[in-house]
Length: 510
Ligand SMILES: *[C@@H]1O[C@H](CO)[C@@H](O)[C@H](O)[C@H]1NC(C)=O
Ligand SMILES: *[C@@H]1O[C@H](CO)[C@@H](O)[C@H](O)[C@H]1NC(C)=O
Ligand SMILES: *[C@@H]1O[C@H](CO)[C@@H](O)[C@H](O)[C@H]1NC(C)=O
Image (cartoon, rainbow, N blue to C red; front, side, top):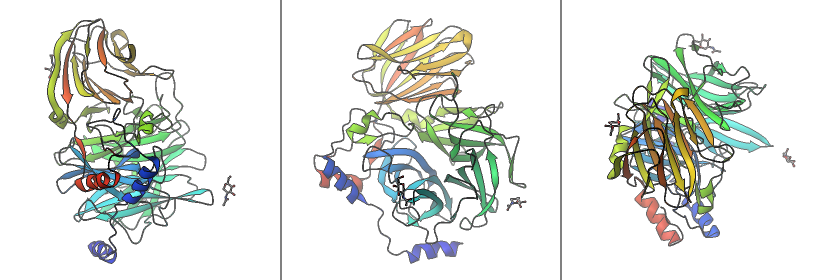
């Protein structure tokens, strides 16, 4: 297949630079766009201009981490989607580069939907879903794009590599590719004729020729009408399957978001190509993150063995207040996953996050009722109590009111957040082992709360009007260390210069 690779790269000499900024230019000129920075994060990957959603192709290639994202620069809403890209050497300092994939071929002309990446023979290879609307029908195919430098991608000349969904399948998207021994595997999220979420498994000897093997997992009525963004990996000798699911009925406690991202743990048998001890049901499907805005998680394996995760810090059909400022939405910070002996995933910020700390703003014990000013828009709070026998709370206020609170109720073994409004509360069971600990990341218009050793995480958008005041509530004294965090997301010089020269004062990338 190496020959095929080279052929692909040589034949497509047209090597048109996939840097289609003219559209952006036209759009910005037309709209007299000024990107406002009020809600713009400093250390999260957010949309440079226009719309961003699900991460894709999170991987490590030639000493650098790559993450792609669904990108629609022409306005603050989903549309004919591209693959934007950002690159990092350390998981916290990211640089945006011009888009990697644009929807302009017959099989992807209405969108290059999310997928995954793999490294093979020194090429970074992307797998994505071509989205075409024809005769009021959606046609989804699975496609490949290849890069030798990790910046410029060539679509494979024999795309699509999977032209048709299995019979009776409605939706068909987000290929997750991996290799095991001599074979390649692909999971694709689907929806059955009866509108039940399903996963299709394909196999390939060479990564280019794919054969449908089976529907390897499915909902039996209670886990949604459509499955998407599958992710699959081995951790602690177990297999973990992550899914994004549309259509689970929530109750007062679980699955309260419009759509869910969760996981099941079991064993994948490579002999029979089937899951063992793994069923996707309301009993087994566990939410990954309990906040309001979390979807489409992607993982990768770092060289040091860590399983890393990044997700969309967003949710469909929610209000993106910043869209009127010329951009919309962001990705989460990168997290590390561990699996407990009870089959629960723990999710903690990657240790590299500490590199963003520039200054200690607070470092003291606070009694219930005491407050302090945040004094920054991008910061981290490390909160400890001396035990976990009493209730604890941290309340974020602005415009003179309580706006977001985190509270731990000791005798119920529960931690909750409340963002206000009709659908503001999210709960999770939590019985901290020993002391109560929270690590909280705030970045202009987002908050990520990590409880204990990562047993529970809440990720949500917030829109502070002015400075944030932080109040300690509950019954316990809390020790708070507040670190100011620096800006760590930047723009490739070529991209920046181009935008600067062409839009003068109209566009400010921050
Ligand atoms: C597509 O749907 C629209 C609105 O329902 C209808 O007006 C149009 O004729 C349809 N087009 C085709 C090709 O079926
Ligand atoms: C799926 O893979 C299994 C294991 O290799 C094989 O026995 C089975 O025949 C395959 N099914 C199809 C439809 O190819
Ligand atoms: C808070 O907890 C962290 C993590 O266990 C620990 O490193 C830190 O020393 C604690 N700080 C205080 C003031 O207890």
